[in-house]
Length: 495
Image (cartoon, rainbow, N blue to C red; front, side, top):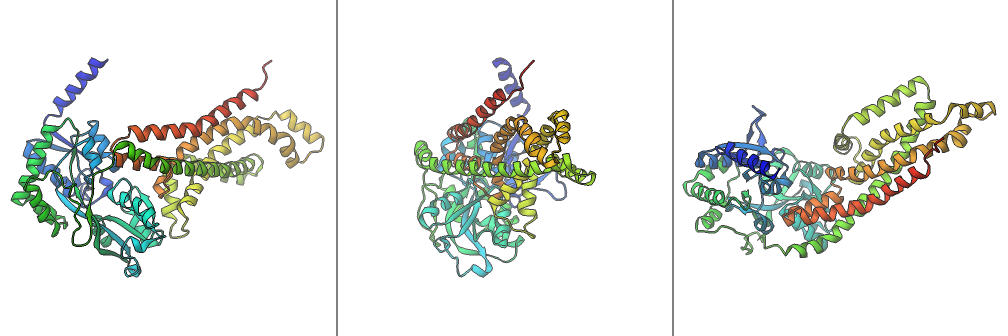
């Protein structure tokens, strides 16, 4: 088996010998990587052109591979593609795990606020007690995480760079901290916003490769330096309107021989500082452990309350489908089938973002409603089947004794149906506990999201993944055991 895997790997490398596979996230959009409006099967952006430039210099054909931004480092590490570039920020953690190119673009972390608040919120210190949004797993997130204790800021994490600015305009957050490249693009797209001129920090975009790609790293660095020297990089950046006065000095330092600019922590004219070296792995793990525990509590509370909502609504739907008239049964059937037939992720997006113009639900409430009503559809089927499983003879006997429908339900049919439904209902609770990881799209930082942030900053999924799995197991295992015991205890006796 191992020999077959080795042969398959060799064959794949030979087959891809003339191709330079590079990974990026088209969801990030222009000016990095975005789908071409004229041909959605192609991508465009300054990182796309840089990848094409590198491939041309190596005599290879560029091939784009879509990957989630937060997973680019792990994907390139495992060999899904040769290069990763999509506005990837340089960090000590990445350099410890991967081969990293020389910096090719210098960006500034800037604050964007509503136009009406431009005088009120000029710095992070001014935002004490307010919500500040950013992307998870970025330098900006690290800055906001530190500012939570220093300035009492509430950091809000997003998975994309579009919704932070739309939520800022809608009043859900009070500021956004992100790269000036993203901020400039969002200012053009979203009216009523203002980006403060001062920089909170300075960082650099780099290209990632696996540690085994030492020769490729040298080729990439040589071509990037050549493109800086002959002006090709400047031409690309000017085309995408991201060239500014910060770039010539940065290019000069790289051409002078600097492979990394992480060690430069001098304040610039705006008072910004460059990123510094990250603490050791176990030190970071200990620092993140309280955050993981808090996120686990959020996951558990959200799951418990959502399950209570699902049970209540699901039972009401089941009663309506069993006892209601034809019109009510048809309506409830449509509701159940539509809910079960569409992804819960889509439902969460519609509830939180789609209905924002009508009702602006807080993230936790939107997550609760989305999960609760989605699982209510499944619970209703369990309860309906359980109600119909009660022997008809008992219902006829109750009717003969003069019991009303509701008295029969309360004293005879309901208790027996509850016995039939409790074990699968407990199993559904375990499933809901794991599905709660989807609510991170609504800026709720639950256990999986906090683990993703931890893994991105640490540069590996091994330790964060193990901790996350242990916490989920600690929460779900007792429920699974309870379901097994109830199933054994209440199993119908055999003849």
